[in-house]
Structure formats: structure tokens, C-alpha cells
Amino acid sequence: TTYVDDLCVTSDSQENLDSTFKILSTDLKIGNREKLSWHIGMRFRRSGNSATIDQSAYTIQTINEFNMAYSKTRSTPKKLETTLSKHDAPKDDESFQIAQKLPYRKLIGKLMHLGRQTGADISEATADCSRFLHNWGLTHWQAGKDILRYLRQSHDICLVYHPERTKSPIEVYVDAAYAKDQDDRHSHTGICVFYYGCLVHWISRKQKSVTLSSCEAEYVALTDAAKETIH
Image (cartoon, rainbow, N blue to C red; front, top):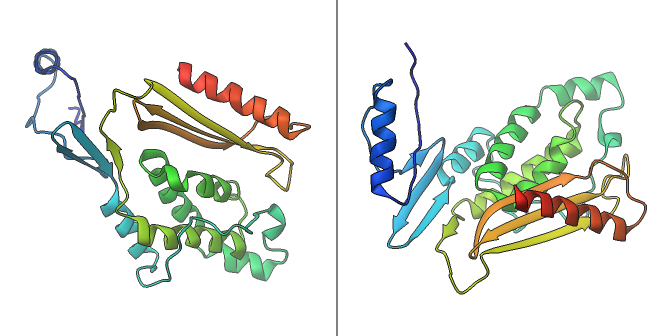
């Protein structure tokens, strides 16, 4: 017997939805067909022609899990002067053992889930922290906690989908941070894709090759943005 939970089927046509469920029901036992409200930790709300998606409940749960419910808040996910490096990792056995007791991988894993689903605002800071999952130190841990401090005051921010037909169908914003990685001098790419004014796709990641100038880094980022938009 196969059990499948949280199957989400969407369409702009009720007729298409009915035919899809009819096909599925020939091989699977379909449970209650309800309007989409919760799916893998995301809350969906509709009002007229607009819809919102948020992970406020999951965010609050994560904040409480790491005992940050009463911590100071931040207005940004990271400090401007924060530059993470492999040299921030423990340099002796005692410091290593202390760092290994910190649930760093668990924290970053949860933040990555938020950043990929609805948290475009934390994706860059989380991407920085995720580079050190093999060997982290107290500096990396504090950077992860800074993201939680930011989420404390921004957990109710949501993605809003209310298409503005007066805008261009697709708008893409892209930028590059030249030689952002202090360890290997790789640059960083940030991409946001809007569909009729609604954010539908975003990426924040390190570039695969080393560029020799800020101009070259921008061209690499522009190429990545073009490929992401096509796909």
C-alpha cells in the first residue's frame, strides 16, 4: 500500500481539476479535496484576486527551538561587516569539540528550507552560512543566530501574488558581488524573477568559476539569470 500526503494540485480551471482527480482516482484512493490552505509548512491565503504565501508558524517554531524567542531583533539578516571564512573554524581540539556540540547543521538546514520556499530575504545570508556545514566555528554560529534575530521581527512577511497586468510579464533583477568569498575569491550571484510584478523565483549562490574582474562577474551573473528565466 502506498500512502501519499500533501498532494497539491492547482489549476485555473475547475474542469481541469476535476479531470485530473478523476484520472488519479482510477489508481489511487483520493481523500478529502479541500481548498489549499497549508502545504509542507507553508500557509496559503486568498482574498479576491490576490493570494499570499508565508511560513510564519514554521519560522516561530524554529526561533523557539533555538531559544531565540526573547533575543534582540535585527533589521537585516546579517551585519554589513560580517565576512565568513574557513579561518573562523576552530583551530584546536578544545574549540572544535565545543563547536561540534552546537546544532549548526540543524539550524542552517531549517533556514535553507525557509530561504528556498518563501524567504527570499534570507537566502543570501543563509547561503553564506551553508558553506561551512563541514567545519563551523562560533563566528558561523553567531551569523546563523543573526538570521534568527532578523526573523523575529519579520516572520509575518509574506509573498503576495496579485498580478499587475500593467507591468511587464517577466522582470528579472540580477547582481554580482565580485570576489565575495574570502577563501577562494569566487564571486556571488543574486537573481530575482518577477511575473507580472509578483516574485516567483530567486537564487543566491556562489559562481562556479573565478572571475578576473567585477565586469566579468556581472556577465556571469547575467548569463545565469538568462538561463534561469528561460527554464
